[in-house]
Length: 147
Ligand SMILES: [Zn+2]
Ligand SMILES: [Zn+2]
Image (cartoon, rainbow, N blue to C red):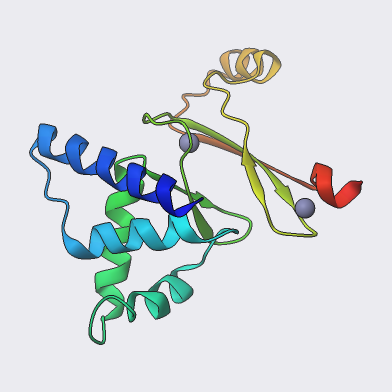
């Protein structure tokens, strides 16, 4: 994400939090900036290391709590297979997550289908399964790496 885009994102989140009466604390803001500024998904350990550029000797729980908050708000996603985080490009909270992950350059594209694929949804109904969340991660090569 470009610097100007990050600034806009942070501003949007700031007004979203103000409207909802949620505190957008400094660590929350900085962690969002760090994740948004990373070209590839970034892990909690690296987030903590970078948080040191913003805060004096931040403790791990400071970073972890900020990550948890951003996740709860639907502002970031955890890529399970990489154990790393990216910002959400949807601009709203959604339940399903689908990502195309390039194994060459590490870039991630959010597919952002809000609905479960039909065949899967039908199977779930057949099985009487109650869905709480879902996540699909597709690994492969992005357009520029496969060219
Ligand atoms: Zn998203
Ligand atoms: Zn790639």
